[in-house]
Length: 136
Image (cartoon, rainbow, N blue to C red; front, side, top):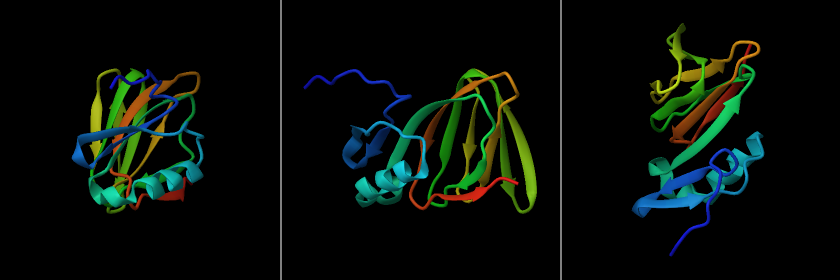
């Protein structure tokens, strides 16, 4: 069966059990979208993965952490600085086109984008149990 083309920047995909790829409803940009996503795919547990691509023109306003699996972050355009926090220490990882980094389970992370710049990032995330906290 042929599939219709879609934009990953608008509709993320879920990598599910049985090697299934399931296109998701349009991304709304708010946390309620993630809650709905997790409800739709909770049966896949920690093995399900969310694949999304987003372009950022501002630094993130929150930290997040994925307790149940690794997250791959791949920069496909522009530049961003990923901040990772563990045991009270913050590490800065500079990302440019083609650069990737892994956020291990339990690592809090956020990202900075320099004023006037942008960064397009692809995420492959084990989203089950994801937590957020405000950025100070």
